[in-house]
Length: 372
Ligand code: GTP
Image (cartoon, rainbow, N blue to C red; front, side):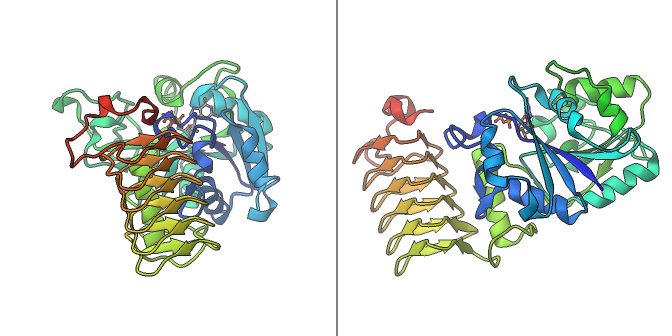
């Protein structure tokens, strides 16, 4: 028996409006809810029982996965009435673990796509007799992240806030959002209040002399928390740049789910996914995008690096670039959207609502409804 906790209670504010009524881990990435990729990877690494720490839109998780038997897992659900933060959620979920105090427990953030060897992380933790083992990844530009320097033996030296000056960039190693805790360490996290593992639990463990290890692993890693990363992560799965046993089809330029329809001369490329019952009409081009179930892209439109929400409509001859189109939104024919636009769920953008080429409408002057 090997147990894990998956943190899935966040509000996913950076992905609004997609997360207005779907929790981030249940948004479809390469054709299945993102969480399915994580659950299948965990199962493949020998994890048998997972406690899902839910909060925001909690009931939707059990509706999707039930007892987990279809995935070969035993799933338990714990709900925080008020979000307790990452540490508080781990502590709260621990009440449902069955393992003893010396056993390793894997903990995953619910929005990380990675190729890390989960079983090796757990076995390395056990062999080292560590209190906590963190998966660390290296990033080119560490300025947006908390830094985690380690010594030659992999012992974590500090947890540093986001660097503000070049001198503060002492390492390119960052917390990759996947941990192994010895169970007894979780039981010592204060119960019933908001706790951040990154800002409170880990630094306190260092002060107390605990053995906190960092394992740097340079396989694929991406935090899918922003629209750009979400779209890139999905495209990488479709293209096969990262392996997942959950991708429902062969990897390649595009993944077209059952029930979707693609017209003559339409071009799907760069890791695009077309959701079930979605329609791409003749001559449309969809590049590196996530088109969710039941959406429709009309003839002659070009959609690039974007998410088109469930049941959303893109009229003919539109240009959509780096956009997030909410569920059920309706973009009338002929619109050329300024890059990076987010359109709220159910919002109707009228014909000629935004024309970049004809006079460059500044975002501040766009109809209020298109802002999230
Ligand atoms: P943003 O609002 O866009 O920052 O996203 P988020 O709410 O998911 O927050 P963040 O990306 O920092 O969270 C990292 C992981 O921890 C995600 O898998 C979240 O679902 C999860 N998480 C964050 N806060 C909580 C919480 O209070 N309770 C639980 N159960 N999970 C949480």
